[in-house]
Image (tube, rainbow, N blue to C red; front, side, top):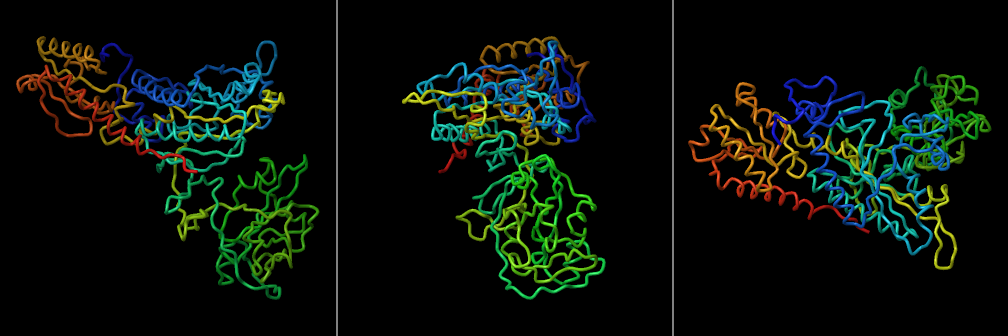
Length: 592
């Protein structure tokens, strides 16, 4: 493709529309243009890179038996109501009415549609297993788009769905996706880690997220020093060491003005591990507002995702002082001792439930209780793991000895879910087994965001000059730069371009006249765009015997005779792909 033929221009300054440098580079290099918050146009280079990513996705899905289909982006709300997600999902699900006043939605995912297709297309166990996938547009009305393509509203996703007759079949396809995803990311050149994750709005019994670890990530991930344990903050656990302190007589202590855990630890000259922290939420439970008192060790924090699974709702907020007083507790000096248990739900983390001597509030201003013991002085309605993991906590992995957890930031680049029968049961998607008994189809769901993957590649492969994308996803393999101040040089550059194309080489030809763009501008643009190989035709290169060929990541180039140019380029391209293949061969695989 010639520069003169495309709708495109580079820019020198960073984009004011995005706060992350890699996203700004995608704008500056002419890959993307923002139309509205979280909504982008993909220009020539962006579209070519996206298509290359899609090609990798398509090849790997086909390799595990995928059947490519295409489903609508507009859905009747009825199918979302059947699975209850119409009522569960917030405003990120775009709802509207058509001209017949029927409720409709813009698809953010397609589980309901796939389950509906199972109803019409699957009758017998003989038709299973199946794997369908699409690479198609979705829309999620994000409250806060960020980072260019990292968090958008309109996006292209590869979403695949496994359909099986039993759990074993679903697990088999889940494992195949687990491995295929690592191959996909390795082929694209992006480092990834798979972590245990919460199933969230998707539901199901197991899920993994694939994370690109980067300081600009919005997710927190815990990884053990020995790399045996990886989990999202939402579900991460740690090995808990219970207090060995023996019971002692309850003692009331005057603690004037001491309301926080930090102040209490200092006042009592004790570790936060010996303190019981009371956290209050008011939640909508069984259509009634109820105060929830959470009891956690003083050095830990409540994990709200774990809380939501216990109270089975995300409709809750911090309790007001009036609500706390109403159950007999005193803000700043609260504990479960002596409160009205009929007016609240008490949840204790197991670290508290296994402690026989802690300091807790006395439910009296300026007083705390020392030597509070679970079982003797109070009990809980629910005992569970309800706290977040933290840096330095012991790894919970059964084969780890003394390994500690560390938190890193990451961007989710893919996810896989074992959905089970949540959607097929709701939609009535059943099949007849060998005995003629109807059973629900068992589903798995698997997604990769195409644009987000490109955004992460830009973050991983950038330098002070611009982008430097891997050969597998770069828009072209070669940037041909013509420094032609005379007609004969321009003619030579044209012939070189045509020959490279004829030899099957992907080449972008900067054919701008020198009066429009100087040598410095052309070189800077080539570096900014991030094409792996640059070929320069100039008076100097011709005098030295041919064309200069230089890798984007290297400072110096070499002169190659024009009749050997295509062979040299192919050799370099093959070498670059070989480097990626080594990563594919070494990619992580599922371990039972």
